[in-house]
Length: 102
Image 1 (spheres, helix red, strand yellow):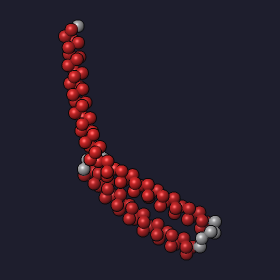
Image 2: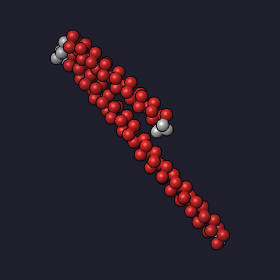
Image 3: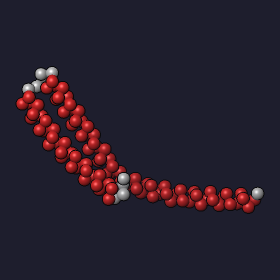
Image 4: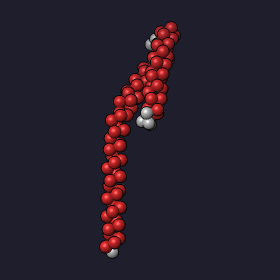
């Protein structure tokens, strides 16, 4: 029984050492990756808000609250902003992949 207990204790100690090393690596990765991942979340939030505004404008058009011309202007603004945000977040995702953050 004692040799088995020693083997179990040794395995636990080795496992804990690895776990501690892994925790250090995880903390370092979190520190390194947090800025880009937070920015991705921020930009995706902006995109959601932008899309919600556009959906409200579609509703306003269907209810006759805005004209087709006003809707076209708002749609063009939405398209431009969405394109800017999409390009930016794509670059952030690319950075996250290259830096092993995803």
